[in-house]
Every structure is written in C-alpha cells, then in structure tokens.
Length: 74
Image (cartoon, rainbow, N blue to C red; front, side, top):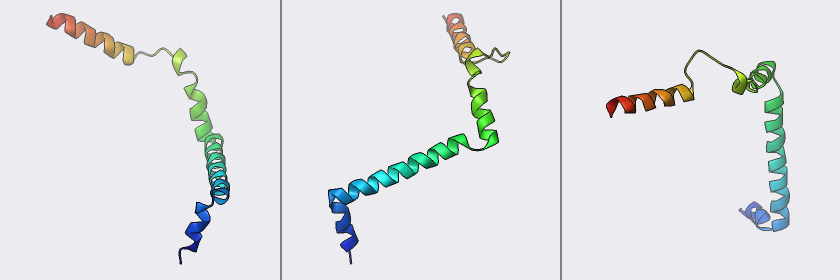
C-alpha cells in the first residue's frame, strides 16, 4: 500500500524529484515576475523611488519629528 513511499527513500529518485520541483517553482516565479503589463509598470516605477522627492513625510521625517518630541520632553 505504501510502496510509493519507498520510492522517495532512494536518494537517486528523491534528487530527481527535488530537481524537477525546484525547477518548476523557478519557472513559475519567473513567469509571474515578467508577465502582465500592470505588474511590469509597477515594478518599473519602483526603481525611481530613491530619487523621488515628495511633500509627504517619509521615514526620515518621522524620525526627525520623534527626535524633536524627545527634545521637547527633556
């Protein structure tokens, strides 16, 4: 009944199975990343984030405001 489990205990069979499984997962991830116009546009827009200057407070703005609050409390 559980003869198929003994197939996995042989290292030659489990290595082939693992190779095929990881290769399939790799191909699926690559297809997910590089297909779809909306996803492509969104990922392309992310490369400009470090160069954008915005009016909203980012992480640095929040850190500065916390530092000012600490100085006021002291």
